[in-house]
Figure (cartoon, rainbow, N blue to C red):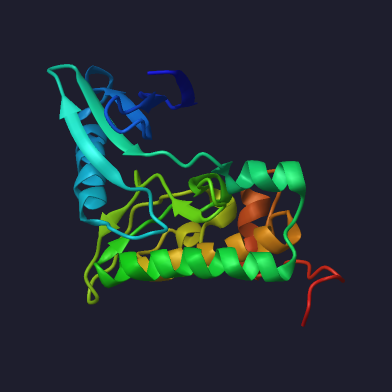
Amino acid sequence: MERTIGKGNFAVVKLATHVATKTKVAIKIVDKTQLDEDNLKKIYREIEIMKLLRHPHIIRLYQVMQSERMLYLVMEYASGGEIFDHLVAHGRMNEREARKKFRQIVSAVAYCHSHSIVHRDLKAENLLLDANLSIKIADFGFSNFFTPDSTLKTWCGSPPYAAPELFEGVEYDAPKVDVWSLGVVLYVLVCGALPFDGSTLQSLRNRVLAGKYRVPFYMSR
């Protein structure tokens, strides 16, 4: 293992190199002893879902290893980092580039939905870039299975990307919350800023429920 490339409350992500192939991989290391029963179930569900996903624009889970205390997830490494950091460094994308990236994101989300999987945490920080600057959707920690005739009720994701029904605290149609987040992501790519923001969660909620956002002068109609 070479260096730490990410850190969360109960996990750390390390960059490593496969000895035989020299391939760079990201290893998510989870301390199971720090997780309560609900979070442990959540991490195992994330693993179950990632094992099912095979798409060019979704981070691949290669292998899972565990000891009595630790869990190791060996995953594809996206060397280009987060879209969020790319936007901070380079500014907003032109519409042609944003369209290309967004098409990749939508194809991956549509693939998930076709396999009855909802991501529920689509945001710029969870959209990674590989060495060719192609999209790789990551972090399926809030993902879940759904059926067409049922709804979900757990609040998930980041408030600026959250759909109105989440703020209203009602049960929701799972794919639709991803679709709302996709709209926010597209705005972020083209504008380099969030469509809905607020100094407090309440003010953010009010703006989301009102559907009020600014259309910049440089955006095509």
